[in-house]
Image (tube, rainbow, N blue to C red; front, side, top):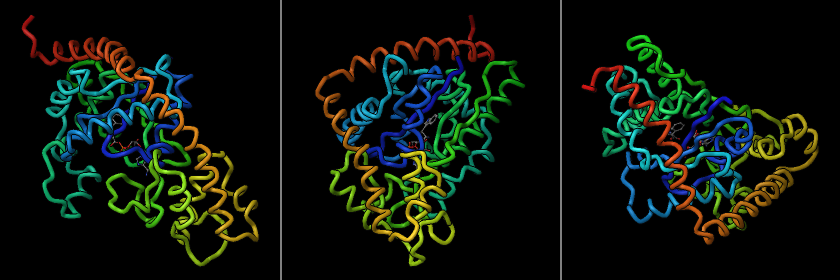
Length: 328
Ligand code: AMP
Ligand code: TRP
């Protein structure tokens, strides 16, 4: 069975972008692949987090993984920091990654270009930790949203370089990016990615948002005056984004959606999207509350960490022997 690894940063709440770009696919793949899904808590402290908020977000993130359909019996679910090998291999990967490579990462470059203050060393070198996250598990595939493709490609380059230098050690992984939903845009500025770091709450639908609020955000999503439901992301980015969302939920093609809303207004289309999204979120939210109340999260994390550590430890031992830092 081929293996998959992926993680989500629990910075703030999970939103429709993380769900459609990543989480929903984890659930679909778990029957066909040996899945390792973790909460990337070491990644999220690259930006300061209030400790109490962070802790709550970690618990919510795990509860939402399960509420969205990840099955702890099939998928190994764990907290990144519970498997110490991530940080250790992260350092080794950092020593095998060139400054030129890190300098090319668009996520970091964008932050710098925007003049964000207080950027940390962690945020600059985080692709090295991400390489370690993946390579520790000999993952064949890494399901991610579009924004993470470049990081997985860097991981491939570093893995190949390491294999050439030290002999075959790592499986070179491939990013797996969905055709629909890999880049959900902000509802009130559809030229920007939907993001939890977006300060404007109107553009982002959180999985735990009150459903009335969800409906309102969709009904007031920014559109255009073309007045035709058709897939034209350049001239109608808002409608294209809503079509992506609808299609990701229902599997309808863009042509089918265009035919369905031929001669109808944007209000009708928005209502259709809002109905679909709210119906799915209602189920997720009700499961989420049951899971939090059940107290099952600690057990899931303990079991996940034991299983993940067994694999990660063997890989780290092999790496340390190969690079010559062990004396035994
Ligand atoms: P993050 O929450 O930033 O850790 O992202 C978790 C996963 O969701 C990653 O695979 C991202 O690529 C994906 N993701 C985040 N934002 C979006 C978005 N707006 N559209 C699609 N995928 C996204
Ligand atoms: N960097 C990813 C993000 O911001 C999260 C992540 C960390 C990840 N390590 C990973 C994703 C390993 C896939 C594989 O979304």
